[in-house]
Image (tube, rainbow, N blue to C red; front, side):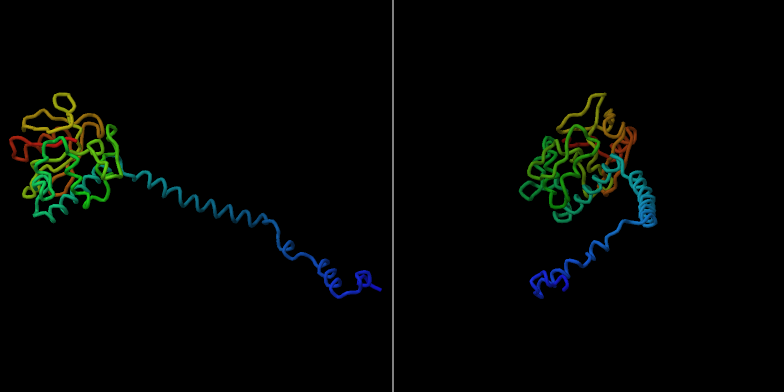
Length: 239
């Protein structure tokens, strides 16, 4: 008699015994990588790294400098001015009464940030108001908490939509006679000995004109821009 006799001669136990004696196919299918397969995987990884590294290096090399980011910020600000004036009788905020949504009565220089706040619908984020090289202030994501410390750019209070070459905004790190300009209203006669401080862009800065263009200018070029406005005194709101 076979093994089945000792298992109470039942078909159920016969099946259990037979099943327990079958080899595990799952275990049979598991095996280690061969040397050839490992070599192929390593080769593919090496090729991918060789393709990605040059692209990362190029992206790092082409990443804008703080001055470049600053110019990009001012271009966005210039576009926001254009959009705002298009909805407000072709006038900038500082040329529109507060009762009509502008900042005309607040153009005393102490609240420069308000000129940007009224354009919050046109600006993508308040972060563009801060120059990456400005270590005296900080960027913010909140319009509700915006203040002068979050703004790196002055407001040209005399700028007019009728004059494309008017000075609309730009870096605010000025000095006069070697003394750094403070927050408030800055009135600049055309013969004013104004200069850039070494901070941010090393004795140069970015200026936004009313036509939307941004110019990186040296100290001498800054003086020329003031002369080109044709104004006896240029009024700037320094944040």
